[in-house]
Length: 135
Ligand SMILES: [Zn+2]
Image (cartoon, rainbow, N blue to C red):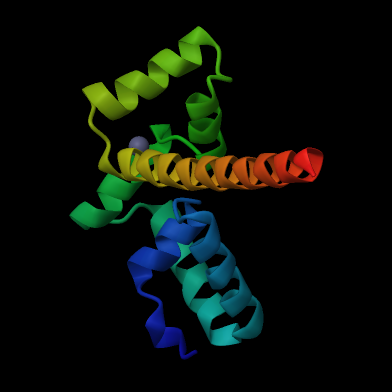
């Protein structure tokens, strides 16, 4: 895939660990394979660290308080302590961070898929076990 397929915003999101796991892995692969993409990414990182001037860059810098995917995952599982869970609530519901909200929704959806698959499997095994017993 040509480097141009990755936008600056996407690379910055990758550097900030804001991409969904799958896309982040994709970008990582491309970075490994492409010296020119690596160069672009390091340039972006340097510019970001020096402090950008565009609204987009400022906005991204202000997102230091954003939550990681693993924090959001723990939140969904109820594995965070109260103070942390409060912060997640505050960040997403009070501040209304759209990125974290989208991440949370994404995680929630994939958990629901996992749950549905597990349930289907369990039903299948239970019914085949039942059939075996009744024979
Ligand atoms: Zn956020």
